Image 1: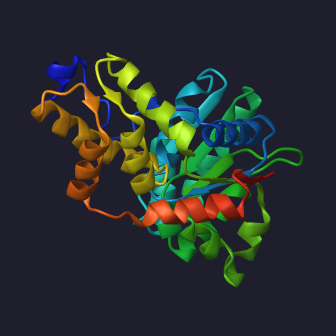
Image 2: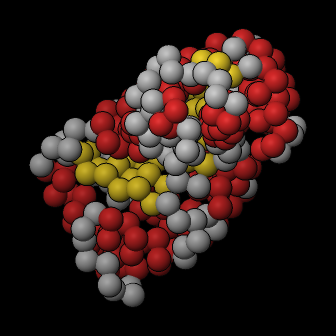
Length: 291
């Protein structure tokens, strides 16, 4: 509705995880670097966690899209409601392999043969499991068994487990200690700080087609950051509403009062604003990472 008024080719603040709109904040750059490091070094298991809406899925799609297609074979599983058998079928199907069998042994044999072929061809195989915090224990155990497909010197498949912070608790369970011990690269994606949030908003408007057609005042930015805590999805929601308010008032500058109205209309106080600030304070403003 407001795109024509502001001169946008498309809405700049949709919440769809579109890799084209990915903004590489300091945290996102570090998370991306951890993913690339893990694949290049055949690390085996990778853990990527982050609060709801911090951009994990968008980052993962960008990561997979940017891998050299000649040197990699990739699959993204985005369905936590799977049994262990359904998982094997989904993995084989995503790699273009036979998946109709009801035998776990046969499915693993087909997958193992594929992995050996890719190894001989000099390719890396990458499997990404998104929303992994919702996977049942038996499915996570099946993922561990998939990781057992290896040679004497190399892991045949690199597996990324991505999910909300609850994934940390799931993997900390005693019955999953074998899986947890195999994770060699870990990264927790924090929300953006105030400066990055400002740059993020400008970045999305520029990609949508018109960088200076609309501007957010400093007061507006403060309202948006206070509400969102730097969580990209919440930034998108409130900015979209703020632009709609600006359109109805035929204003190209989004004022503090417009942003405050937008915050009130999309839900008032956000639990993520205070949580993000507290987390940043506890970590000294730095992303928590270890590899």
